[in-house]
Image (cartoon, rainbow, N blue to C red; front, side, top):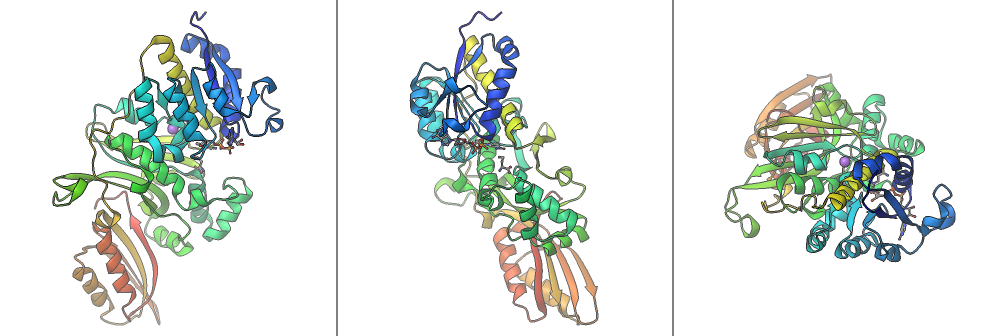
Length: 441
Ligand SMILES: NC(=O)c1ccc[n+]([C@@H]2O[C@H](COP(=O)([O-])OP(=O)(O)OC[C@H]3O[C@@H](n4cnc5c(N)ncnc54)[C@H](O)[C@@H]3O)[C@@H](O)[C@H]2O)c1
Ligand SMILES: N[C@@H](CCO)C(=O)O
Ligand code: NA
């Protein structure tokens, strides 16, 4: 039996995730104690409305989260969400030398520097595996298992709500609006789905992933963000016609820098691009088969090569699994002495603006079916120094469709190419414009 004194845990928030944390802590108490080497005891649960929590022991409930944090606890688990009061509560805990576990990506994407500094100053642990891709072990592999390698790219589906909607649009051909309604009816999308569909949730996760992968401090403000509201049935059909599928991707990659920049870029030869946007990927890509509310993250590293992490990225029990894994880790550190890895931001790579990021575009046009159209369109690409990888033209009686897939060029050059093409008299409509990922450039 464990001889160490019990590890006392304060749980802040008892919603979808918190309820499952309580259940796992209770159901697995004996196993957890054996694994940690000390009993892991729930000292209190901070909630807003105690009468709404009949499923958890009433004597543990309190509405005073700050007092619970200040009480005789060793670890604080934060599953409230949002910036305040979560930020202040976690800072108070860390400053007092109490280790912290959080699932709060919104907070981490803004305030990791401050939280890590507080943890370093007191020697406490800060763990947050549940904040990205829920149950999937991802942050610890990036931070620990791959610490000896050089990660070049992380590309993932890290938002279940938008993946559910895009998968639905792909399988039924329905519009974005219709599919969002269905997702809301089934309880996948929240009443206010803004954070998910506009890409804020994925952008927070991208910032956390890029920070770990590239040993660089990246915040949500460094992430280029586009959501899925403008993805049309025509985009989905255009992708399908060429053996591709549309996904909302979080992409973190190393990109070359000229070294002629100013400020943070001066003299740098390498930067990073961190972005969230819909993109077409080949149906043969490992991420293409990730459907519904599942998450998956594809990682490329110099020595390890390609890896994929796949599983449930959301939901009470899956997210609580990651929270409990972190809780066991910090509790073990308390029992055995020592600390988990500290924040590592030594590389300080500059974030490159989207306009200077190399991307590829898929462009579908409705054009007049007459001689010379193709050469007029091709001339605009040449003017912008954008090289064409493939062209497909289909003529009909009074109009025709033209699909162009480019080689890599800067996003800014591609954007101005599309703008200029849209203004050509022979182009009736720009049917679909989308970036292409997951293929040779
Ligand atoms: N639900 C998921 O699938 C999921 C997945 C990964 C990460 N997360 C993250 O986990 C955290 C919690 O998510 P959730 O889905 O459980 O949210 P939730 O809204 O279900 O639960 C949050 C709870 O915190 C309570 N709360 C709010 N202010 C409080 C305060 N001052 N003191 C005490 N309690 C307070 C709310 O009343 C609510 O019960 C968020 O940071 C979220 O981003 C959730
Ligand atoms: N709203 C998020 C929850 C998990 O972070 C999603 O849909 O993936
Ligand atoms: Na995770």
